[in-house]
Amino acid sequence: MVERRVPRWSEFSELVRPRRLPGDATDRRLARAATIDDLRELARRTVPRAVFDYTDGAAGAEISLRRSREAFERVEFCPRVLRDVSVVDPSTTLLGAPSALPLAFAPTGFTRLMNSEGESAVGRVAERVGVPYALSTMGTTSVEALAAAAPAARKWFQLYLWRDRDASAALVERARAAGYEALVLTVDTPVAGPRLRDVRNGFSIPPALTLRTMANAAVHPRWWVDLLTTPPLEFASLRSWGGTVADLADRVFEPAATLADVERLRASWPGALVVKGVQGVDDARAVVDAGADAVVVSNHGGRQLDRSPTPLEQLPAIARAVGDRAEVYVDGGVLDGADVVAAVALGARACLVGRAYLYGLMAGGERGVQRAADILTREITRTMQLLGVTSVAELTPERARLRP
Picture 1 (tube, helix red, strand yellow):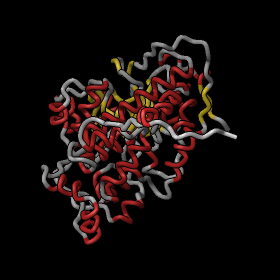
Picture 2 (cartoon, rainbow, N blue to C red):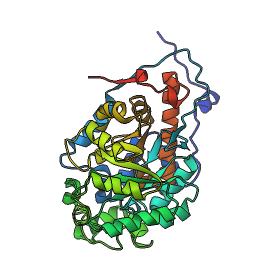
Picture 3 (cartoon, rainbow, N blue to C red):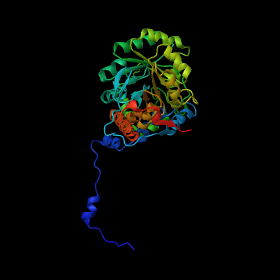
């Protein structure tokens, strides 16, 4: 029989410690986000459904996207114990220059739709954190404006090959003149993937004020006020567009691109050349033979060909095939610092992350991007400590494997 008593107020008061979070409502909301999934949920509640679905969704039945996440869930770490991990260094080198983490911020299109701070906010966070940021051809900030917003950031420029080759060449020249250190050629977009969420939402660029979107505006008034009271969307590639993302891609992208285009870019571009969208060993060898300094094992985040190979599963074989001649990166489904650690152990030099920072951008602008970066940094560091490693160089294939 347990003896009961009435607690004294002094005893009770010691247990009452209301949590006082600093800053305004956005700061407090972001401070409660402990994971990228938490930021995703904040983003879902902050922006209109069509905008969230454009970021969150993928092609077709979204099988490729689910498989990418499932592949990371199959990772099994192999830790060593009784190692001194009081000091851990998660830095590495990417394309011959330092990076504070084994990751880069991936190129994403139409970024100012998520929040009017857009690519400039992402570039400033990349500058503070010390990681590269790739500006998309379909970005909503020009190469020159990003260079002015984040002058000390490591800036890469992502290029889609256009039907209009002169316009593509002009963009490359602008990137060179603005001091971009690398060109990231995306090669998995001969045509647009079937983004069914966009179709069902009637999503267009810029957003059309239909009855549905006006009803949605009542639920997300701050987003609409932000959109309508800031400068109009301006694309790095086009001054205006009034159709869907797929319409734009099918009109502009070059379905006749070949390996010869990689060779021509290599001959004309003085900086590093990264080829993004490689999904097999033979193509990896071919683009490296054509002059690529790095390849990104990628299926475009599942946004192009559904049921495409899962990047993390393809990574080890591609790293073995070309890793001695070029750097190998991976993207798709990276939503946790442990994902980054696993990918490096399985053969990647680094991961490209896109959705992770976009969730932060939607949830809280530049502060949300910073929160995403802080979460990933903390997770990478802690995972390395729990693995018993103190440097990225120690993330060898013995430290992680994929369960069947």
